[in-house]
Image 1 (tube, rainbow, N blue to C red):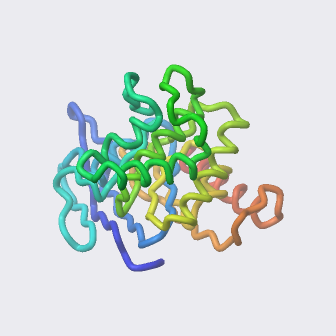
Image 2 (cartoon, one colour):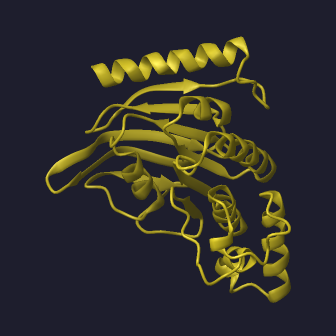
Length: 247
């Protein structure tokens, strides 16, 4: 793993007396893509909220570059399942919105760079109501990358897309990850997606969650879904998740 960027130790969190996380510890290195897999409602979204500083754990600690995380920061970006675009702004307006403190030309050039990287060139003047679900997610991802955070947390960003659009979004995300170099912690409900994108995969148990296994992927990029090694790793993770859910 590259130099450690995010570190959490023994994270515990409860809501209304129900424990959701039970001592979760993990690491995210510089320029690393880590996916988190686990059963439904096992606390993956809660984990992102704690790591990004949106919420505080009941016990345990989160560190970024060795400093405690206690609140949100522009160094940590979050992409959600439902893209939170401003309906009254165009694609360009949405991507430029967090860049308001920059000069006009700098904010414009930076926004256009990421609009183009996410395949939205030609749609700069379109409003969210004129975009497909995949295009809205592209816009949301472009907006986060334009902020230039150190780490990006993604909470099942492709789960509501059709299979073909989801595949295309995986290709786009891999391209921008390799080109830009920010670390990504990616919550997914899709094993194949996680194997395609990740350097490591962390598997959580049912709630109250803990880390049960970690897989390191040394497959060359771009990855082939049909290669024997890809199929082998996917099957191994499927077995792990099945045992976790049955156990």
